[in-house]
Image (tube, rainbow, N blue to C red; front, top):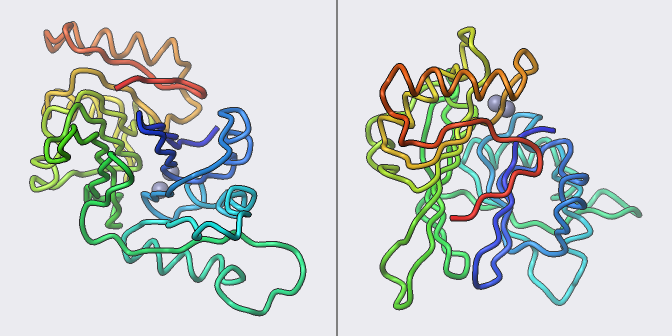
Amino acid sequence: MRSSLYIEGRAGERVVIDTGPEFRLQALRAGITRLDAVFLTHPHADHVHGLDDLRPLCRDLNKKPIPVYGNRYTIEELRERFSYIFRHTQYGGGKPRINPRVIRKPVRIGALSFTPIPVKHGMLDIVGWKIAELEDGQTQERGGAVYLTDTSMIPDTSLDLIHSPEVLIIGGLRVRPHETHFTFKEALQVALQIHSQRMYLTHICHEHSYRDIDAYCHAFQADQDCTGVSMGSAYDGLEVEV
Ligand SMILES: [Zn+2]
Ligand SMILES: [Zn+2]
């Protein structure tokens, strides 16, 4: 299935990053019955075209529409692609009750903070997300995961924002170079550069089996003398505790 991330916070926060074409199937499998927010990386079809299936999760009229966060480009594209949601021209049928919001700074959802990480996806400016949990007193971030997909370049200012995450989930498309995505090697090099303790490759194309990718990671680690870092492929249904 296409790449996305479902986050459950310790205080009951429920958040999804990206709603790809299989969002409905993924949500059913994960048992998602409510969401506090949706965060988007960018508006390519493989990341947003399951958006309409948020509908059953925002049926309760006593609750506010689900906030959907993205950069300006993403939110403008969303309003165009899903115009029926925002215009009053559809009669009958249902549509999701969502509240699109342009992200300008880190957002708090309960005890979780979500920081947008600007990255390049070829020519496009998109965002990854850093997720951290705030300790009691709510000033100190603890642990933390970084989710970067569809990335081909990370500016230095963004690298500074994601130093030493406990978990890095990063897009690596394949071994062969690609104009708008990191290769496996480029993604693994980012993990070393920012000193992540655990790294999972995601957004993998169909040219390689999971077994091949894990073998690739082991060979990379032996070559780079970094066997203390955990590196491997993500897969559908993978659960990670941070
Ligand atoms: Zn993309
Ligand atoms: Zn993609």
